[in-house]
Image 1 (cartoon, rainbow, N blue to C red):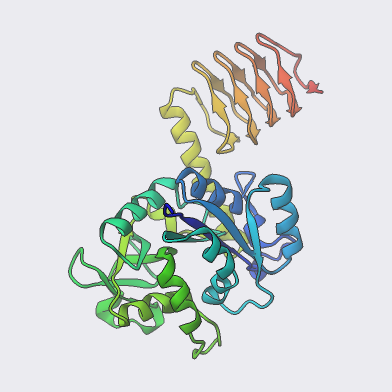
Image 2 (image 1 turned 90 degrees about the horizontal axis):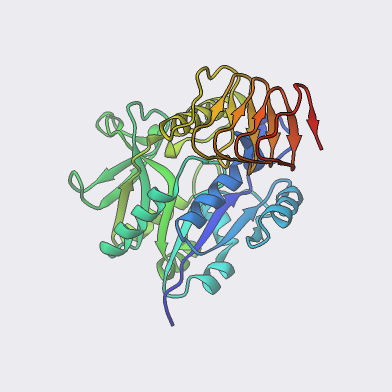
Length: 340
């Protein structure tokens, strides 16, 4: 039987500091739930079937998945007892869908870990014969993150040490743990029951799985992501604002490098799944959401708002609103038109 890989996404957190009525993983970055960013990255990386571990307000996550991503399976974590416990809730899924292969574990509220980093970590994981390969990042300011300690500059991982437990020398290490891992399936299933909760929080941490595997003589590796933003998440609305600002700048930068004319970015917000043809111009105050596609030679704005629309070649939309509609090629509706 050929090897299989699968993905487990941890999305059980409540996000108390957000003070919102949505589970944290469903909060949007550029109009797109963080969980969808993570699912899309795993799929683009070819990481196999996905299981989302739900917990707080699990009915909302399950309903959202049923509507937007019905291929994803779910596992329920009735008590939030740590990341190791959350992965344990998906043990049957892992046993069924990663036979002889590897398991990718991702955080459901880390939207910037992209497919390239996931694929690169898997290549290194298989090349080096690792039991576990964590995805890391090198930060100018690593404050607050668990440090990755290696045996030599590019050697295997010998420990992950949290900031509060780190010595001054360890605090100087700039490579940090993203909380994303590739595990060899058999090693993960073997080690999950051995993770203890002898800590101040009484929780079962997935980082302890790495340490237990190292103690058993298994090899642990780390693969740094090129984009240091891969480790970023959000615990409150101020941090969520920062994620939105970073994502907005990244999307606009990529579009402009691809030839989209955005002469003034004031008030322009474009979602990550919006596509453009050649020779397009986007004017201030324009907001484009969902899977909107824009044809060639279009001018959008100022003040145009579209959600899930298909815009034909040569259309000019000045202060136009539309949701889920097709705009004919060459269309020039009057300003302040609502397309239906």
